Image (cartoon, rainbow, N blue to C red; front, side, top):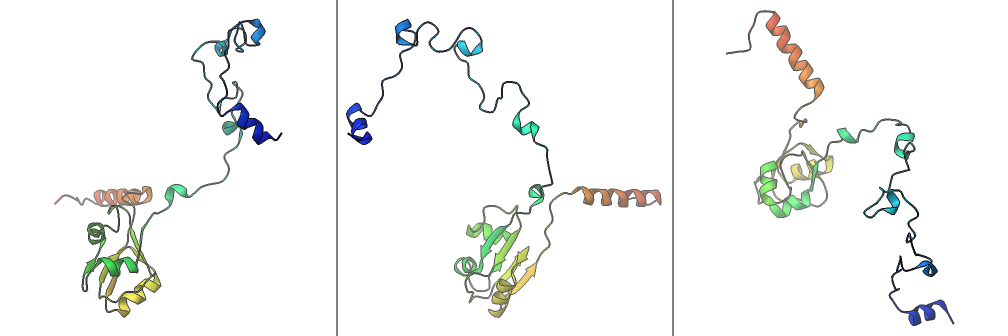
Length: 178
């Protein structure tokens, strides 16, 4: 007899363990929960990462190094194949046009055009970044490419330089108010 033959005879579902049904069952009296303490009470559960009060693993390990993940710039990436199929000849391609065409989800992120595919239409493209291949293909088709600088809305270094400029202009007696 093989193991797969045994399981077929026994059946798919195993009967549940009936606890608290006398000493001879092996799960009588305390029902396998032991004496006293939180573990013997109903409703008790322990968090998966709890280590009984000792210093947890994630606090024992030192923080090492630095991660640039917080400062990564995410782009809406579009291939020129999509521009070819979504826009007419002579169209202006910018963030609003891409959004209305359904190629990007929102206009909050910068846009990068990549050169996968071919373009035959004359397009005026205004984006934040573009690959050299995509630029050459668009210009070869008679279109124009304008790269607009994109920066995050606020950075600490930017605010410090603006504050220092305002302070220096106010010290010299000039006012920024018109």
